[in-house]
Amino acid sequence: MKDLLDRLRKAGVHSLLAQFTDLAGVAKGKLVPLAHLDELLAHGVGFAGPSIVGTGLPRVGPRSEYYARGNASTATVLPWMPGVARIVCDGFVDDQPFEACPRQLLKRAAAHLAERGWQLRTGIEPEFFLLRRDGERWLPADADDRLDKPSYDLKALARQGEYLHALHGVLAQCGLDVLQLDHEDAHGQYEVNFGFDDALASADHLMLFKLAAHALAEARGLQFSMMPKPFANQAGSGMHMHVSLWGGGSARHPDHARNLFTPHRADGSADLEATLSPLGRQFLAGVLAHGAALTALAAPTVNSYKRLRGGTTLSGTTWSPVWLAHGPNNRTAAVRTLHGRFEWRVPDSAANPYLATAALIAAGLDGIDRRLELPAESLDDLYELPTAELQARGHARLPASLGAALDALQADDVIRTALGDALVEQFVRLKREEIDAYDTQISGWELQRYAAAF
Ligand code: GLU
Ligand code: MG
Image 1 (cartoon, helix red, strand yellow):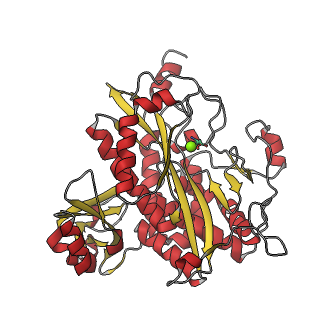
Image 2 (tube, rainbow, N blue to C red):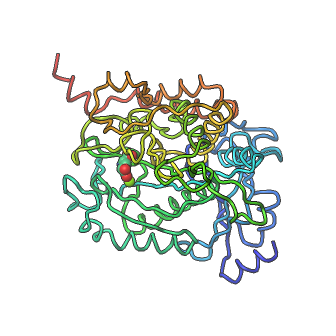
Image 3 (cartoon, rainbow, N blue to C red):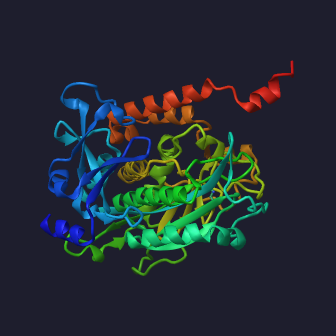
């Protein structure tokens, strides 16, 4: 504590940003003067519980107060907020870990893995849009970003170079290992990749990325957007997760951990031709078996399901999954397998990374505990196969709507139990309200189609 206080003082920090993530995946918090660091770490700072999205906490009584309790190891000086350091907080209510806190949930899931000597590591790949507003319309910020196939376009990348370099710079100063920045497959769409890490750390990094990306965009008159599918005729934004399970290290020697998903030959050498070890195959079988319920957490908005569809886009392809299938380096399936890891392609940019990862762990552990058999891999371009053929191969379609995904979540005892009834109840309530709000809108499309039609 004393060391941390000294370090932050020396860095010119006067305030702490006590930050937590609400059920909807949005960063929330408050500023706390540095002098109150000890209180933030030991006890937490208080918030009106019912004012936070998705807590379901009452307006009065001891459970009305939500405490955000800081984790000292997460203290990071924020280059874009001079004098401020972010501390990632966990939710506490009545001095107990709050059952509907997404980060507490992921901590519990990681603890289940740790009981077996395991650690999940994830690499989260956010895709996002840079937009501008024109009256009621949202447009790509860069009006010259107009190629039909804009993936990897260096001219558009250069036009947003100042923003992207600034973003890279602050993330690097915060300790993230930024690997790549590129233009994605839609107008105004970009992707930033940073190094994979412990699953909790990766989720914390993703939230830091969002804080930075929003702040830097606003300062430049841009709208940073994690909306999954802003443009009907173009690709949406995924937030793919690269997943591996590690074990064999120790608290003193975490570096000794090995990737348990790496496949080996009988003689003990790495099998470079295969993708996943037997343990990895079981874990992935669990992820596919619970794939429909996981989708509720990974694709949590009504808009998400406009991304998870087949069909063409201006660039030719959505690159988003439709079928619960897997295949080596197959980007047309829900899961792309690679050597020693898999890429879960269902999550979109609106997913709460803590919830999605916690649910993924529960699904994977169930696959391991029940020694589930991994369905046959898909080598084909699934966008090309007729639906009847995909069904004949035993692939299930991802839920077609948020409502269907929530039904699957509520029907899935394993995932529901792992998330806990309190959290599931709040999540489902929040999301059914969202569906209801959406369903009561009359869209421009409806007026165009029906107003003069009958
Ligand atoms: N934007 C695509 C998606 O919605 C993914 C593109 C890619 O493979 O990077 O999932
Ligand atoms: Mg991408």
